[in-house]
Length: 447
Image 1 (cartoon, rainbow, N blue to C red):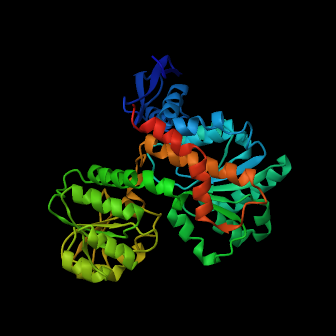
Image 2: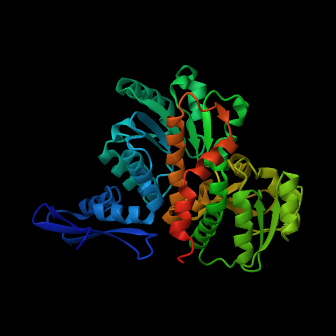
Image 3: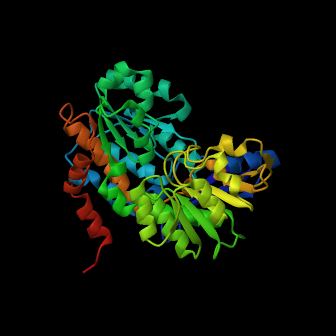
């Protein structure tokens, strides 16, 4: 069958590996069946089945992924030939299947796999081991995000030797802060930064407004806000239901901290689930917007939690929204979740302070001194990514294509693209690129 591999095992053993996707294209499944164990004992069979989860993707699977992401896959067909041939990207993007299509698109635009360095952020994605294996099989350098300084320095050396200009493509502020802190003398070699998330943009604030490199902020673009926010919120809530399938949510109180692009959609999705949703935001214009949309609101997180007594608190600010003392007014059990950055949204050290740790499978559970028990879902990692693909690839498609277009823009206008943060310029480039027209043709009306 298509996508099947037959493995011969020692002692006339045999195993069959099959790969396939659902008709919707939103889930990939790799199955291993040991038909005859041969000389493999129980431990050997276990090692074999574990290794299945670290195999590169098959040609059949990759064809399915490209079909799910036509905008990214076809970029090379409407961009100048070899437009990135002398560019060397460093990427810190979530290791999900959509990332592999982006990497293939960059290669089709002229980037050699050996000219790419990828930082693995070590989130608990569904396919992270297979994504890493696939990238390495292509010849891409993959490094742990905790070794970012060494990885960036090594990348610059390779780029210089090959006569290529490096560019940063980031999701969460993992790259430029390291470059500015550790290697300020290398900054001038980079074409700039393409950033996917607002949490990544927030991490640049400490460097002030005069950044020495151009920032192409897909994160703050109108394109991303228009298409992606609902998909992220919906993915987070769907993963919540998967983690806690026996929990009843209808009629129960919830609090959303942050009423930005993602927080607003999370609040709406939870209300559609018939929860009683309250919202806090530190910016008055957003707090008023939440009030006008019919949500219960409050200017103090602590008072809002004490009066609303939520069973669910979702942090969506991109900074630290929930501190330990905010929970002092809780009287019952509560689940805490983040939909933004790794271990930043929730002040886990403060939440755990003086608390009793309880065993739980869904995350971290703490019995607090005041009597409430709080469970931090997904160990504080973004709920929409926890052992999941977050967005369907058809949602991620336009954002992955936008990241590639950002790299193209920084390359084409090299040394003429203004340094610093210029969202209006990002919007003009993306909205004049033809990407939205192609998106509309793909997903808009059929007549």
